[in-house]
Image (cartoon, rainbow, N blue to C red; front, top):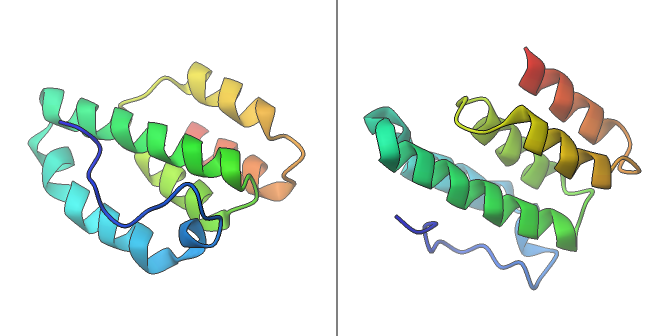
Amino acid sequence: MKSMELPISTNSGSTVQIYTIWNFRREALAPAFDAGGDIAKEASDGELALSAACLTENPKSYSSWHHRKWIVSKGLCSLEKELVLVSRYRHSTDTIRLHIHSAEC
């Protein structure tokens, strides 16, 4: 399963700031996570890749970090890999600290 093709553009920093789009993605992804197994893992990997691309464009995007935190909270990704990504953006102030703290809980 490829990452869902919903209206997120990594070419425009303003698109990733629209909370409604991220909320729509969470609602659309819920059945995949509820199904579990390979479907949930593929959905998780796709969303992590998408949010990483969005954060490359705008590392201070609270909505992108929030969505990523939601994906990480599903427990289908490596926290070590997450720490590597977050260490790239350590200059992005408290957003990252909140993200890491929430992922560890």
